[in-house]
Image (cartoon, rainbow, N blue to C red; front, top):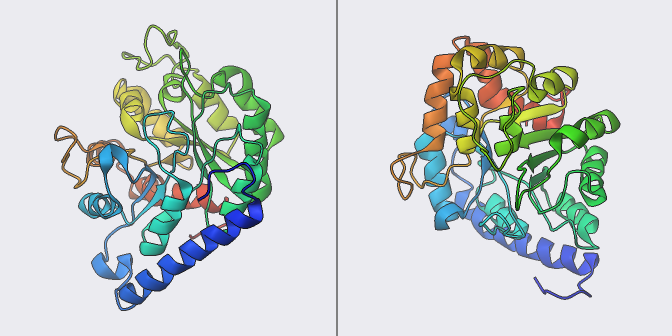
Length: 326
């Protein structure tokens, strides 16, 4: 894609549509006789709400291998256009991968919201088949008008948005306690998906300063921001992915059991795992997905509640509460 200030929305649409159509023509012909995921294994559904393709230099085929190894039927693939979090993944790459694996990948988009054409770019990605924004991760405070603008656009498009909350030096979307509820009150249609360190630190009413710890441990103090906001706003979802999610759930299992029960319709399974095979290849033998699956199966004995967390809530977040399927 040309990197010029004069590259218009029309040019962007035409170039992206041509590229995606070409990819679709070649890959769908090759895959036309293959059965769907459900036909292949007949097993239970699992939707991972948080994956990146090139995490630790992983290829799209490696990402599918990870999904196969973890029993993941579909995944939200989240680009990171700016690379500010250490990973750069273009929305166009996600769309190409979607056309390679349309039954497996649910494409999200992301763009640098500091660009003057940011909203036009998101609208273009919407026309090209993206299903949400994420991961929204730039060095901007949560109260910035440009952050609100993309939330408002998701509200208009009936989309979810995955937001990385991280306070402290070099953080992202800082000010969750001051600004998140304002947006929840103002925008009722958008599904906001909370993720990362400061989001999960707020599972407790006792949140240490970010310079002290972004991964607090020990017993959870009841009355945390997450409990209250998720109880008051059904369009707020919690992404369990990465070390921050697992740390929050495992630090106080007695509290976690009640938290999972109270918010069973708003908890999203997600891994943010960079391994290639579901066994920790290239990631010190650790697979976030398998670690979390094992933990949740132990913590949630009710099969219907587990199905909510493993895939039904992802469908609700993707489509809105009135929709029942992808």
